[in-house]
Image (cartoon, rainbow, N blue to C red):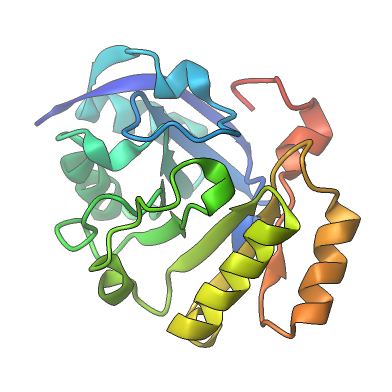
Length: 215
């Protein structure tokens, strides 16, 4: 429980969500329980990574001097050591973010962290993966993200949003799948929908390109 499989650890600019543009330390864990069609971190999702002690990871994080930290993957929460790592980060006073696909029960994990939950659309190839109980586990401070591969995906996400009232409780993010949906199209769909959501572009890809790692 004091070990995790680490793919990479680096300081960069937060590329997505409500904290986009802020300096952020990324802890990317290896392994994933899904196989999304647009996955942009296959090297982490399908790689084994390196076994690292969580105390060593938090020590490395501390050297950057940045208080915003994101735990990501792959799917970070499938690792037994993810919970203790997250708890240690929160104990040390970091603003901890967790990017997760929502297929893992969020209830056991530290409530001091903020969860960015990616509800998989049909176009992802994993559209039935979201854990139903996680709708109740989400708090108002958490964020919900849809990665959209087509207009059909967008319409599906809007219908789910209205059915569940997601835009009334959470920061709602709509992200165009890189190379599949034009940002200008997504912007117009969002305007026309009347949903209180936010267009979320992957600005790290705009800065460094879609294939760069460690950024």
